[in-house]
Length: 129
Image 1 (spheres, rainbow, N blue to C red):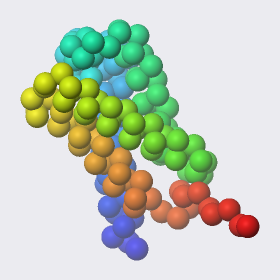
Image 2: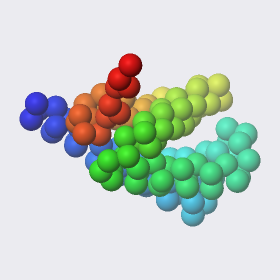
Image 3: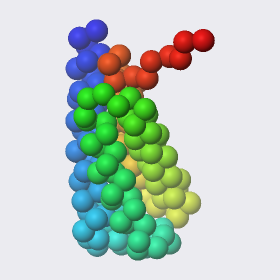
Image 4: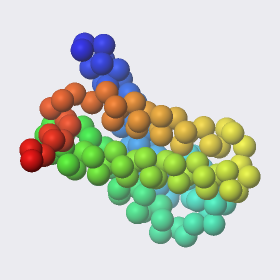
């Protein structure tokens, strides 16, 4: 039990740091960096996509870190999963090297680990029938 809690918090804090840092890069429309303007333009996405991703990443981190609201947490985890798997496939489709795919892959793995090891008080309770 304690091991699971440690795994959860390590993965969650690294996930939060990764999402906040890439979200900040996207909100400030910085040219370089993981998920920056150059990367998004190279993948043929419009510039406004940066703002959308940045806002949702910051909101997702808030949702994952605050206590309670398990339904919102599930949505945040799902959003992180879709965003990172989409980033991986976008980089693969563009023929990018592994070093450009690795940040999204790492955040995807951290998302899955954080979700899997989340404590019971952060999970949705089953519906009684």
